[in-house]
Length: 264
Image 1 (tube, one colour):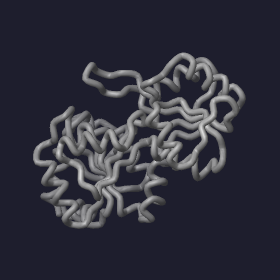
Image 2 (cartoon, one colour; image 1 turned 180 degrees about the vertical axis):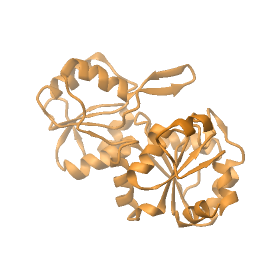
Image 3 (tube, one colour; image 1 turned 90 degrees about the vertical axis):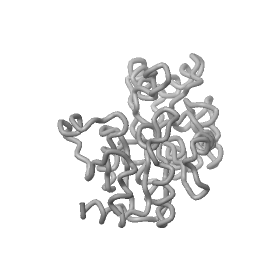
Image 4 (cartoon, helix red, strand yellow; image 1 turned 180 degrees about the horizontal axis):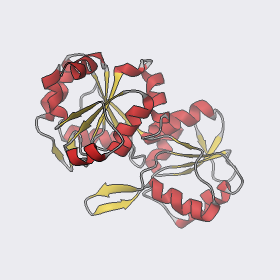
């Protein structure tokens, strides 16, 4: 597999989805601990990439540490962090009406964004697991003023121990039904905004990134849209039969992330 060997060696930044890619529920996939050590030892940067904007970087760091999958040189990058970076760059000095968790609000405050539900300049929707009717009311009132509208990611459902539960994409549909408005920018996978922020963050070329994930419609489509290398792993949501039928075609397909080591 000469081509994948070339891509792996060219890659400096491995963008890893988490659930289904490095672990399933709370169980690491195979010998992934040593696979990650192998990559780090060869100067590769591990970037954990998630669309979930409800949790803080620290929360993910704690989980990955508990599983033995985190090293201090690794990077955790959420759609919430990417959205805050996008707003800070493109709406500098503007006040935000945020529909999001306390953790997401903290991400915005960290980069100097002022949150203001009473007199905002734009509206930002995240995955708000602390949603109340009053927060929803204020958000839709502000949307009806015609303010710019940004969302952190498009996922309709989020996996949980109880099965699928409503995510930001479901909130978007509810808000559309009320206001007739859809976001003008969606930051997370599979859209390119999150990828653009990573290219700027690391000051790297696109062929130095490889997106590795178990979902064709988010992980792999994101990598393709951003013109990164893409590797589908069959350790999560997608089967080989599903990949064969899909019009979304990754550059490479591996049984799991541990097969990277075989192709250096």
